[in-house]
Length: 294
Image 1 (cartoon, one colour):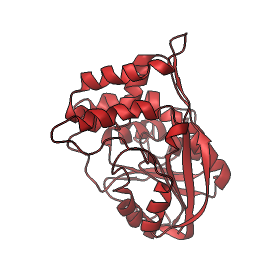
Image 2: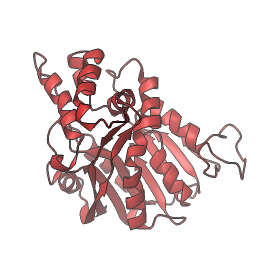
Image 3: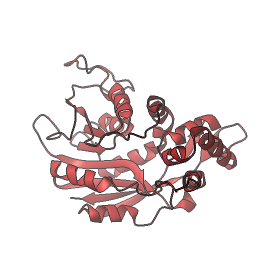
Image 4: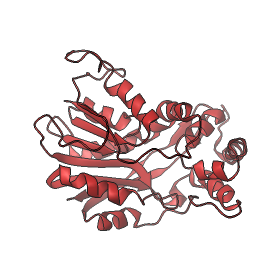
């Protein structure tokens, strides 16, 4: 089916680090794959396949879209991070400059097809015929940073008119802190952020049980089931772990409150309990998803 990428209506964060390109590459090459079990679990439950027309809000560098496209789904991605969106294009649309090419292979072995590309804003429909979406996904987990769901309700409200009546919407979030080994590492962000005078917003906070249900209620969605998925974070070495974790954006407020070198140092120290004898880093985590209907 046809992968489509569009840019979000929101502008990129003006306070993003100067090395945004490097951070986006770290996300795509190190961190994004950690959530692959979450994508697969959701797609298995919803039987995503050739009949699926999916809109991915916050699509990042496109791995979740790639997995859905490999199942035959028609996918459209929206993201405000231009660097990540560029990497998604490399993955999903490697031959976008050669429109009409059929039967070629994408960068990750997935068949590449002709695509519709939009410069700004949400598309009018899922395909050339303007058919509505039957699945909207938000695979950027909420629930561990203060205010991390604030922009989600407006984004959903903008996207829902493009969905069919009774369409499925999937929201995702971090699991309980006691089941997420990464939680103590993320507390570094909160401590450094709160150390600034005056304190900066955006620090880590414990996940609340009803975070996803609260977003669903505010967006006018009806919960229709949920699930938990084990998504361990595994890294080849501490340096990769630091780079991967900082690529999430969860430490941006801490970097602004102090400096990147201090954040890197303290994150590396917080990773010591999760280092294995062979030098790898392993942190078991649980993520939660909520299935809703429009």
